[in-house]
Image 1 (cartoon, rainbow, N blue to C red):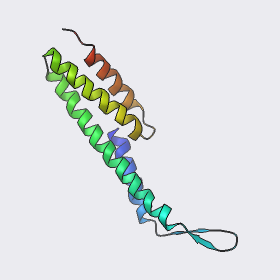
Image 2 (tube, rainbow, N blue to C red; image 1 turned 180 degrees about the vertical axis):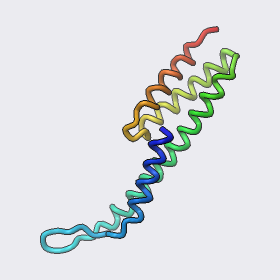
Image 3 (spheres, helix red, strand yellow; image 1 turned 30 degrees about the horizontal axis):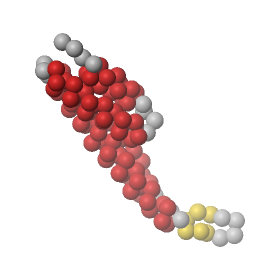
Length: 113
């Protein structure tokens, strides 16, 4: 998920650096400035949300390894489940991170010592 967020941010940077704001039509040029200018903003928002979710998922996954209290493991599993559901929408086609995070969070929620 971290890699896909970085790719989305890179694509947003490339789109915003592209200088053409017009599309060619048979008879003339039609400006598409409003649609074109909102695309990098949308991609930056998705990329930043994905970056935050993936960093939080990495942090809580590492934290989960060090926990021994049952209630702390279950609550961390619930947080990871929420992060995996959010990560589904910002994964941008890379669903491996979502699936691994979902499986890990379910295992943490159902863990019994």
